[in-house]
Image 1: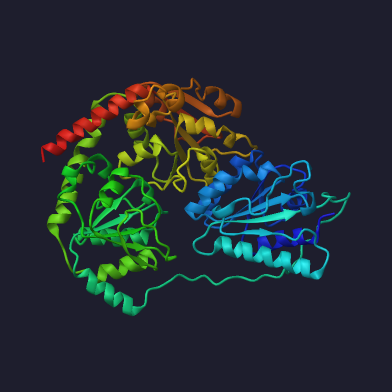
Image 2 (image 1 turned 135 degrees about the vertical axis):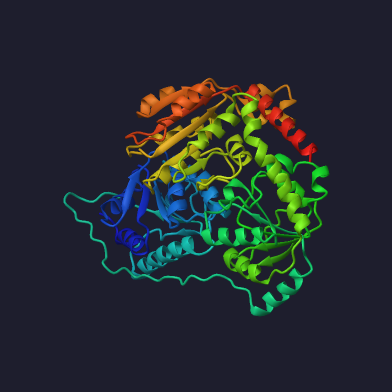
Length: 562
């Protein structure tokens, strides 16, 4: 028998716009699974590995910008959701996490598949709710209804994020033969009006007065989705030389008028001297560039943070003002109220940027074949319409080194872990017919191989695998590479290739080891197909470091000639 409060939960999800649910197999969760599966307005998919399932839901919710629900059985299944839930929390991605549980009286009584699930995700969810242990009275049903509404509202409320409902369930779990599941046609719904903080007119008047005292203004754009309105405003501010706009690849706001290649040249106190701002204005989430963060932490500039929820994020250790408003509104106001210009400050930044921009492609091409040059070649063939998912570690850094991209860039920089990169990209393919390109290193790729262990087609998925058979980033970090334990405990060499995985899952596969093979494989890599394609670029971790050092050396020579 399917319980009324479960069917009502599902009906409320449908009414409140949750149309996609990722289910993982289990007996304790059977009433929830069956109810979702039989609801005609909800699209369900089954992913057996809960860790992968949660990242797939994350990848869908990132694109849909609406909650995706997760359903799992009791016990350690719920713990496997944790990495993706933490990522969703810091990326502000809405998820509705539904974990089935043993009844309260059986917790810690040596009963199978039983852990302490109530509040299990701690501070990494916006809130954790506990369904009644037993729903036997009208008040119990009212409580379950209230929790269902409140949880979904909270997942959507700005800033969005994951919300958890833990649901104790008693046997029996399954409907009897020919039992019809009836969903309430008009479940009780209460919605929450959406609003954003807005500065008072008096505040804007004070800000205008303060702006007049600054003429070396640096705008820093952190991670976010593409936004045409913000892009147009930043372009106007930059072309009029009112500000300098600095962007990482994950900001999705790069343009010909922003500073995109700073990771190549903003790396010494000698360079910093003529570039320091007197005001930093930042918005969005994290940035990638360590050089940029160190530079900003070593200025004595004021820092205004545009933060709609009003919370302090003092990334650069010099926060002076929090602006609880939307970036698009504030930047639009700033466009009309900023009068000071400093052409010398602007030209200093853009002069360095242009020097590197003019010579970087030739420099990369001249040093020889490695994953840096290979990725540059591959991305030149990536259609503008493709979304690019990029794994952490060296993959996202290479992408940032290469500068401006016209595609949407997606990366799990909430926690910056390597887990779940494949799965997040798979979730993205479930939301679009456009191509989705995953750029990943070998450790991230093989770590998340269960992303492909399901029964759903992904003809629009393309994977560029940079396989140097090791954790290449540890050769770049000074600490690990100087230790005797480096090879075994940090670089962790492995001998896998993706060929067997491709055969197992029916993917098209090609492996290249030089520029000529790469160019040949790219000719039809993005052509239509019925299966995903893997392009494996095999290189040496040691040689990649040598090539990167050569590139840095050539760039230093360019900078010295300024």
